[in-house]
Amino acid sequence: MGKNIVLTGFMMAGKTSIATELSKITGRKLFDSDQVIVDEAGMSINRIFEKFGEGYFRDLEAEVIKKLSELEDAIISTGGGVVLREENISELRKNGVIVNINITPEVIKSRLMSSKGSRPLIKDSGFDDVLARLDARREFYKNCDFMVDARNDSTPKEQAELILNILKRNGEI
Ligand code: S3P
Image (cartoon, rainbow, N blue to C red; front, side):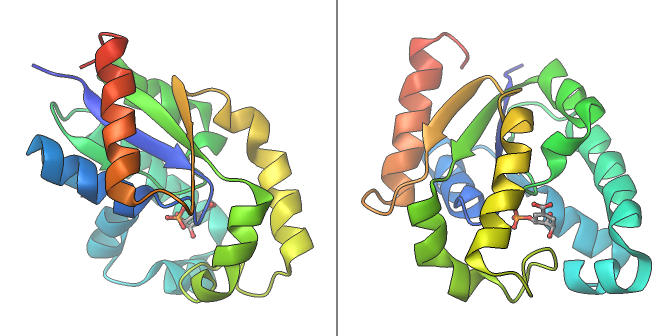
């Protein structure tokens, strides 16, 4: 039985692309908490927010995280707000190592315009609003086990390899 590798991080950090590469390299199965929510609810994240609000989404997210935390040997990519509930992190940590993909304002700037459509919390936000949201989240992201930077000058594959090296070096996998 091996620990799950869990990716957290702010919107646009590249969690999904990096998790996809982690899955390819390791042969482990990939689970994306947002995708599980969409499949279970039968509607998009935007629609869930519109119809039921953020609180309802967070409850769904917590249920999905509880289920995903039972897995073994999986790659789990999470939504950017998963860290907001401490219970999510303690569930994920029971059988997983939690890696935070840290995003800088520069990287946000370069990705923001193309990333708004599917993300209800930033679809009407300017750069400054997004930065303020990131700042409010920083404390929560610290509650993860390892941190690597989101970079525009490395590919998701290179970032996945870096994460695997760090985890191996630390005896986590
Ligand atoms: C959210 C991030 C989104 C999604 C939802 C809320 C957040 O996931 O879970 O829109 O609160 O940061 P991504 O981080 O994959 O964009």
